[in-house]
Image (cartoon, rainbow over all chains, first blue to last red; front, side, top):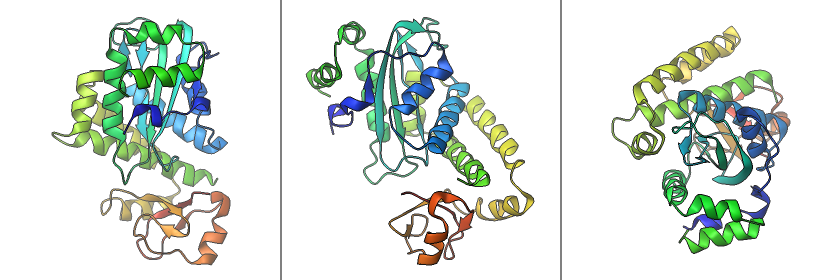
Length: 150
Length: 120
């Protein structure tokens, strides 16, 4: 299973417009193109996960994630906010890169945790934040994943 | 979607989070602690508090049904996909599935008792 195969160009947004944490989460959720009620439920679930502890892992990266009934397969999205946003990250720095991971409560393929681990490893590669900043289109994001073995 | 069904789905998501963190040694716990510095016991406490407060917003009738099902199964609310209850994998009567289109009612599976929502 490759990360590249789990992202789609339409779930990659290189210019997030939101200016605060809640709106960033909502904007990421919108990338999944769910119905309005499902978006609201998913936002609340992600927000509740954030309330347990921020998913901002430092170095400008956050990985909001949860299991939710509103999806029936593993869904991923990536958003970039070039100016950065306060996200209560571990290093207290602003976050510029957001990887959203949502899985149904039960998956036949059981990919959620391996994918969460892979995304965290990818994001923690010292070269990755810089390369993410330079991306010019969603296809380049997918190529970057591919180049890093994902 | 029925507002009480929305609450039940939110409750189910919280239960899923708690279940993942409640395991003494699991992959989830390892990832959450390693990458996200999560204080697991505090997180479980917070989730339990939230679950209790959300339960208070269910109607008395639904709360009774919820309390009856919840101790017996991890998933109290389950999707219906192509006419099959994903709680027990038994087909849902066509009439029930038809009534539940748009998830405007709160229906339960006749076989396993799980609350149902239709994935269209």
